[in-house]
Structures are given as C-alpha cells and as structure tokens.
Amino acid sequence: MAGKTLEQIAARAKSGKPYVVVQLKEALAGYPVAEAYGMYCRLLGMDRPGALRQSRAASLLGAAREKAVFFLETESGGETYYNRPSKVIGDGNQRDLVCRSRTDFVACFENAQVACLSSAIAFDGQLLFDFEDWEFDQVDDQLELDSRVFRSKGRDIWCMDSATPDTDIKIERAFMLNGCHARAFGHWMLEYLPRYVAALNAGVMPPMPVLIDNGMPPQHRQALETLLPQGCEAIEVPLLKSVKVKELWCAPSPVFMPLNEKLNEKYRWDFYCSPPWRFRKIIARMAAAVQGGGRDGRSRRIYLARSERSHRKLVNGAQIEAIARDYGFEIVLPETLSFREQAELLAQASAVIGPEGSALLLVYYMKPDAKLAILSHPDIEGLPTFTAIAEAAGVVTTTVTGPFHAKNETWPQFSDY
Image (tube, rainbow, N blue to C red; front, side, top):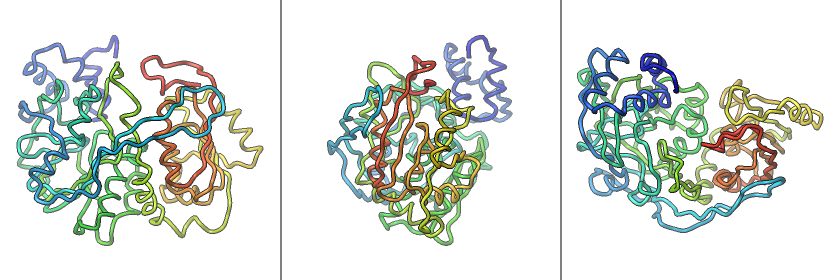
C-alpha cells in the first residue's frame, strides 16, 4: 500500500475484495470517523451511503442462548484436547497444540439481517460474530475486514447500515453461509461448509435455502450443492446488498477463526485447533454426498499442484512435479476441475502429494488408510490443525519440509520455499 494514493486504493477496493477494501479503511484511519466515512463513500462512488452508527460486536453463542427463538446445544465446549503433529521429515518447529473445544449449537434468530461478504448477523442493534466470550480476548482482531464494519476498537465498532433498506432482499427463512472469508477455498472447506453440515447432522432444521456471497468461485457453490437437501437452493447475496430474514438459522464453525488477527505477542496457533471427533461426523456426511462417482476400485497417485500466482510458492515446483511424474503421479491443478471431479479424484487416490495449501482440504474425500505427503517450509507449527482433520478422515500424513527461499517475516506461513 506504500506510495499509493487514496484514489488508487479506492479503485481497487471497488472490487469488493475484503483485503483490498480494508486497505482503504486503514488509509483513512487517521481522520475523524465521520470525515473518514464521508471520504470513504465518495471514493467508492456510493450515491446513497448507509448510515454510520456505533455498536458492539457481540458473541453469537451468547446472543443465541439469550435471544434466539430456537437454540439447541449439540455439544458443550471447554474440553481440553491436543492437535499433535504428524511424522515430519526435515527441519520444522512442530509441537503439540493445546486446544479448548468450542460449543456446538444450532440457533434461529427472528428478524435478523446479513450482508454480502459480512460474517456478522445484525440483530437487536448489535452485530453478532462467531466467537465465544473467552475467545475474543485471546487475539487482537481487526473487525474492519468485515464489510459491515467501518472502524473498530476491540468490541466497540462503527458499523455501516444498508444504503438502500427499501430494496433489501426479504426472505422468510434461510441458513447463513455468508462471510468475509467465504471466497477463499480453504476457509470454505474448513469454516463454512462444516458449520452447515454440523447443523444438518443435528436433524432439527426445516428445509430452507442457504445464503452465500456473490462472486464466489464455482467450485464453492458446487461443493455446497452436493450437500443441499432435496428442494433446497443456494441464494447469492449481491455485493452491497443486505438480506432481511424472518427466520435466520445459523451454526458456529468447529474451528475458531478470527477475521483479521494481529500477529503480536498474543497470537498462538493453539487457539485455532480442529476437534477430530467432530470432523469425523462432518467428513462422513461430506464424503457420502459424493460417494459412487469416485470409489470404483481404481487406485491412483495424485500430485495436487499449486498455481504459480499463489503465495507460499514452492520455487522448485517444476522439478518436484517431474520427479512425482516419474513415480507414477498424475499432476493435477485442482481449480481447473469441477468440485465433484476434485472429490471423485481424491476418492480414487491411494497416495497424494501436494504443497501445503487449501487444496489439501480435499482430504475429506480420501479413503481411510490412503497416504498424504505435505510439502512445506519449516514453519509448520500450525500444521497440526490440518493433520488432525486428516487423522479424522483416517488418512496417514507425513510432512516433508524444505528450506525457506524468501521468508515472510510478518507472516512466515506465507514464505516461499
């Protein structure tokens, strides 16, 4: 962002991409809030900006217990468990992660509102976010990444109301899968789809559409469509639009996921753990939804390639792919396939190799006792949050590390190697 003018930042922010929009909010942070909001609206060309008001970020769980018209706790939280690293070949900073489980529940709020690329539920004058009270204080989260939040300081926020409330979409009943990370495949597979599957597994929801964000890759919607009960549909929420829902159903992610945490002395990978016993139930339903197309007795070796445009580059990727090909591995770029093709391919695999990245969450569809080799740089402290999910799928994982090529000092996980 250094050296760019406000106009240049705003031109990119018109795409609606959360990490670009938040750069504009950050560039205006030195101005008084009312002046900054006026500049923000003008720079983005908003003819009818919504009202800016002070509010509080509140716990989804707390509000659900106190004010939801339906609330079912399916599993209590607070249990200590561990995500342990898999076998590692090479250097690494792996360790046991000490975890605390979240409360699992299904809830329905009456007369609530959601917006495109917002993880918040607007309800009773507050914005509800998927954190438990004890979780919020673990990290310093920058809630401005959310499309509804203009400025924040802890839980105190300035939020943006709908610019055109008279044209907001109105729906009788829906399940919420909107969020500022919903366009990212890793988040979609780790955070969003699992909450919907867990809610379906509870067996208490009536049939209803599912709200998703505009502009998502087609594979995201295809993954959701494998899970939708008969007669249910996915409804896209347009950019800059809100949806008012008479009965809004929701559930928490099995994994705590801040919006945009600061990497300071409070940050610890232990806060982001995956409970394997919950993922077993989720994986069973997700795998069953595509069963039949891929499990035909064939056994394949798959190398999941990673786009050169991605961060966390494997700089000698071409050489590694050549070696894998010599050993009978098929080189596959997952984003060139439909979601069902991806899932069915992994269901046929006896062995999978791939650079560490979101595509590895296709492990949900691998058969038990299949083998997965993860290629990574040495900063693998947080990797047990993923290998715990592979363990839940019954997949045997090994991590192979190589040296840093260009280390990202701010966020080492994004380093080239």
